[in-house]
Image (cartoon, rainbow, N blue to C red):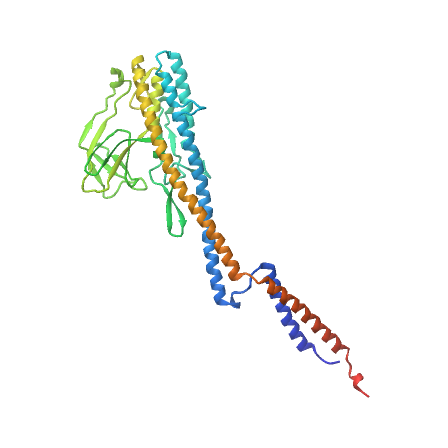
Length: 409
């Protein structure tokens, strides 16, 4: 018998390796299994895959942002309905108009107060809306509840904003970020006053003072300075302070005197002309106004701490409701403006999502073209390999059947 084991096994081993390569490429669609097969091609593939993973990650993040944007848009639409009403729903403004009707009795106004309390609860729910455990209107810290009721809410009706005026920045491309959404300042607050550099800025006690960068300014303990706080709600060090130039003290007796509401202290400062671009805004919490309106409908003035004061006359009730209607209209306008700003920011993310989708498609195609196997070529190689196997095994079979005896004459 002729010994063909070594040479034949060598050829069979080569064929098996080729078969494994073809099977891998046909099974995975990739043109190489190991980077060492083509180092330069492998480097290109790694680069494309890295860009694809980054694009997919950005797309996922924007998908979540778009969900939050849609919820914010829906909530603000509902808030505007609560404030102004629509064809199907009576809003706060319409109820206040009813309250100003001279034919309204005290019992009817009590019913309106009950209705407004229900609307207030709905507004609180809208402002505190969450997506994936993140508060949509909270500002920079989305884990902090947007607005919370005071521990004595049943007595004073106070609802406090625990967030800030800083928007979350979301990546839309590597190294490129955009502001997402709006904060409660754009939803449940209106600008009571504003001033630019070189102007006099006047604000009332209890209002939130925000500058053009979103930083908050607060009165010092003595009430003699307005101090700047940073992004984390910590006073700047060294302190950045502006002196108070004029004040009007609070008047708790105003509610008793007949205005229907206590008068809060007011302050004035000169905005330094040396700070170009500086803008101060006094953000007023509409929930404070709503508390005054509800108390008036129930026949009471409102003290500085939000609690009910003395019983007031029908004329004082009318005057308070008239003022409340004007302030409600002001809040509707502010919320409407905020809604418009939200729409503009939402559009940025919608466009970014479309761009990332195109990039993802591009990288997938490029990855396939660069690292994809040629199926037509593989089919031909597979057929050729099959024929080579058959020829080799046929040769082995014939050689094994030979014997030296056949050659002896």
